[in-house]
Length: 164
Image 1 (cartoon, helix red, strand yellow):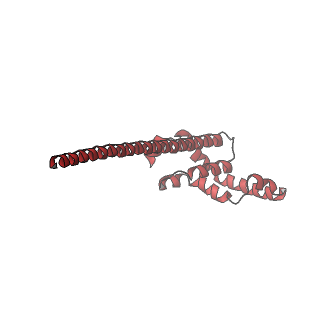
Image 2 (cartoon, helix red, strand yellow):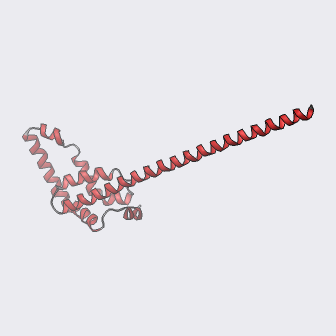
Image 3 (cartoon, one colour):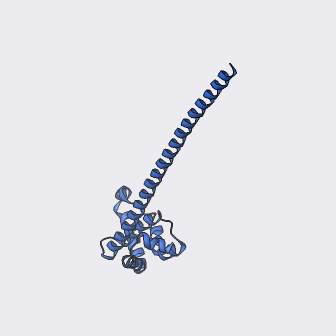
């Protein structure tokens, strides 16, 4: 009789061990799947971030070339470039290099754009236009030098990494 009870206990322990082992395998499988999913999400986020930076770099290059080809005003180019560069973690050296662009941007922030510009009467628009012409005249050379440097050495991830 004792042999039977001991044998039954051994069978129960072995059965519980098999169940526990299979449950642990499932837990490890779920954890591995979660890690794969997290890695895929991280890779997708990294790819999206890289695409955003590539888009910013390409846009900066196009704006700089457009400015040098007189397809866009100095103030508009500076506004567009400054907004794009705000999305980049620039070093102090880069911020200093691009300071003419940020200076024009900061001095034009108060000027209404789009629908607010259209809502202004002609006299107000003319006042702002005169202000823009003075600012562009004063900053034209410095901004064009920056744009020429960008055209000569376009923004790219390799250049960006080398500078930061």
